[in-house]
Image (cartoon, rainbow, N blue to C red; front, side, top):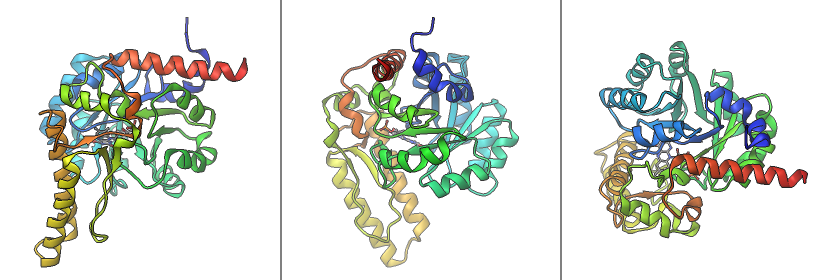
Length: 338
Ligand SMILES: Cc1cc2nc3c(=O)[nH]c(=O)nc-3n(C[C@H](O)[C@H](O)[C@H](O)COP(=O)(O)O)c2cc1C
């Protein structure tokens, strides 16, 4: 018997699209969303997504094969649009018959949506505004994620609640729109589903799951933190192509300021161009996140986390987190009709 009839009814089209039991995605988290967490999420009734990040095609090939060995449920692969080997990575996904590809980190380059669809996979894109959401759907995106500034990692300028009000009434009923950013409790999921979301995407809430390979010190930092500790990075120089990143404040926050100064100076000297400046800044984040997640350097590594971090209080299996969220959502929906 389905223990979450109201939630399941509202999640049906999202879950059918994903091929999962629930319409809860675990958003790709670089270094965290590898085979173990991705398989645990999908086996637990959610939809796991591998974070390709800066992986080479060979590494992605290995990661997909290893994930396939741990689950027979569907999962997705998140590709960063600025990756220099984007089309080779798409080919790797095609070889493994990956069912869903998420394009993140900027608007998809020409031909990328078509290339993915030609492989038979579904394409999920991030829509930063209503106008761009419509454009992405016209360009062939099968589903959208709208992610507010409460989220962990790279963020846009607008909060989830405002994006949801602007985009769900216009696009939610006739298209598949998943809401991300700041969700830590199922009551919030209920609200977005009622507003027309097909499902939700969470990252922070899953980062410390038992199956997550994140270092114990990284997890401890999450358990100690509250919402106000998850701060957005500050842009030092308006010329720099810096995408803000939300992370727990530590010494790494100051190191990022120093990094920006260094890159701005190189720009002034004319020794690098804007593209190289952005690459250097992104490489800084990738390295700092690796140090925190893998090595447990919580002093100067990057502890990317969203404002929902205060709702992450202990290590729990991914399946239990999903069950808790579903039960909370069901309770919220039931209380409306009681
Ligand atoms: C540690 C961490 C790393 C992340 N890395 C990525 C990434 O590589 N690619 C991406 O598209 N999103 C990334 N995100 C965003 C998540 O996929 C997800 O959309 C976000 O965490 C949802 O908001 P929440 O943190 O409020 O739950 C990351 C988030 C965190 C917390």
